[in-house]
Image 1 (tube, rainbow over the protein chains, first blue to last red):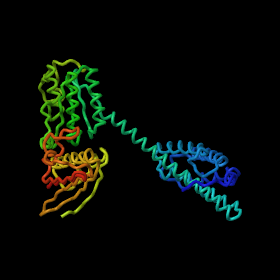
Image 2: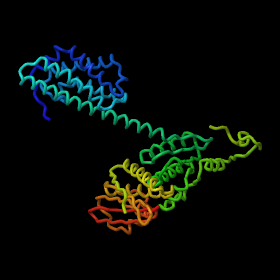
Image 3: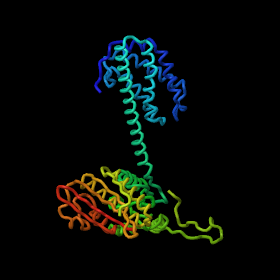
Image 4: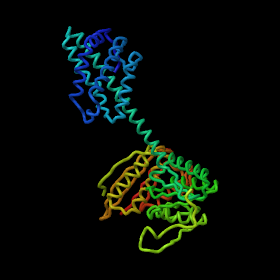
Length: 305
Length: 133
């Protein structure tokens, strides 16, 4: 739709003269149709938002020459809608609830226009102007809302990226990297960086990469793993791959992947035993007895780093 | 006989994750063992990535099959990329024109029961794989 020139002043005058009345009806309109989340916004808060919006709306109407809310004259109103949409998106409002905020202004405004009356031509013109402005603003809020939600999702993805790659110290000189989920390249990159950095920081000589939580190992995943292992080796650390489940083992064989250069173990416990052995330590039973908790203790070990 | 079909698009690496999840769901519904599920998922992952990286994106058709009491899943990967000039060479272990390990196509063939590939240079590539329960 193309923007239309505003009949100077008429709509602005009406809104200006009846601001209090419009505000009361508009707030009433919104509280009457309380959505699922309507309760989470209290009435005084809503009233304050509506009041501030109506003021900006009147001021923009006074100065605006067209119904094009993308234009500079409507900047104040856009800024307010932008802020409001973002705040509501963060609170978990739906996009239709956000659009309703603007749309619900129609009934009070149109009711008023009808009451004031005038000749049919100017009534129709003014109503059309109001409709066009409000529709465009509703579309604008939906767009902002959607953008805000996308930003939230992108941020969460980034947070998960970092969360999913913790490097833990199992013992002095022995690191473990428990991996979970899909190993796409962005995540593998983060993983590789944090592993290599921790190898450097702790001076570890062995790193256990546990893939129990990785559902699929295809050639790309394997390639990423091999690169990580090679990089760690260049830094003087040996990697052990653990958590290879039977179905993954069979798939790797059929795919023709060669993990020959890597030490692999079925479980993290087995890998840890190998790591202890390689660093000159061993686990022995120091007492035999019926109690579960008293049977296995390690000796010949340094305390955890 | 085909009893159920669906089509998914491949245009980003996120789509590959979705395809893997869909294959997992379809094979689980058919009662595939965990090993067979994993084989089919891995083959689908390889071929979807090929369609994305070498074919510039495409689509995957899912078909649930039934033949003389046996049930199976057929996946057809189709792209409109540059095509493969020498299929025999492409199916050789270790051969790649990209950055990969050169095992995707040949490895996928070993993971399934039936494997078909048709490619025309300048028009695109179609790979069909079937695995029976």
